Length: 98
Image (cartoon, rainbow, N blue to C red; front, side):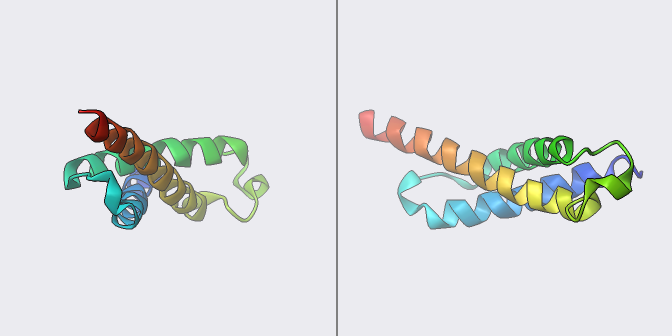
């Protein structure tokens, strides 16, 4: 369960970040499912990238202030928001050309 908790935090915060960006980008014409999926995938990816940049997996004391669940949450929100914005831009451009 201890190994699963960071992934759960990353998915939940990624969905939150994706929903926030999806609400801000009204022109993207995205449904709920793409926002949720992009946010969840981006959250896990962002949390993994931030964790590796901060030295996650090594000694937790060396991870700094953004180590642990706080780092997972920050990485999740950021990754979910970024990937949702990218997916929204791609979907928006596809809708304009069709």
